[in-house]
View 1 (cartoon, rainbow, N blue to C red):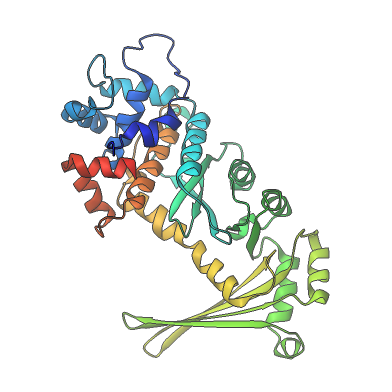
View 2: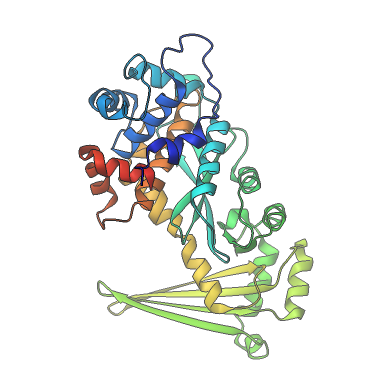
Length: 376
């Protein structure tokens, strides 16, 4: 069977990008994008790193790229990615993910925001870039991202991101700030379900949930589903207990507070962390379009934090995203997409149990392994 080349797996989805350059097109746009993706996989953190990778691996790159004038310079990457339409680049990313990943019914899609802390430019009055990302828990890949507009916040960016994702049959989880009727509408429009935490930004709703779940006498008369997990490790015991109900009397009252469309269950999760003789407990409250099922609810709640541990933390520690000083025009936003592409490709390559940092090193040193990462 003919060996698969990177253009078969990636470039077919990025070849539709419109070249933002009016002049000086010595280097092909697709060559520039593919080299940048390869370099990001191999540890590149800026334009100079990408230039060095392209020059060092030019012979290997010529196996599937034209490179009519050799490998581009760092100024070329800087200029092109600053001008490249960020929304169009993100759409190409999402089209690629949709083509290579199949989402299972009931999979949790965690949506959360992240600030690129050093992308600000005080001299230009430019705030640090905020990105909202969607992460598929079971597939362990980023599905898409959307920039938070400078004059807005995450609440408006999330529906825009959801609108371009194919998530029918999945369960969307978000932070409490997104417990909004507009967000619920956006999720249901995509034929997906929601699990939303309730905190002080919805005071009447929070009070209603606390009045039920915190009152033993009230709980005595309500039919609830219950599930518990206990985990031990590193001298710590973590117990999580979940109660859910679809009691129509409560649902009717809670839905009437702000017209929560699709509401089918409410829940409370109590987590107890014990180290030695000391224990701390915390309760969280949720509304959901899922029918009462404590086990499924607890799974969705716990899966949500994967986007923090398996995406944002890795971007900061392994990809050093928070240290990046890229800030010119669309450069920071487009480089964030490059990191997401690299992260997804490295996650999809499962022939080895190496850490992501080790995978990046191996991809940098081993041409055959780099090809394996690129072709999935």
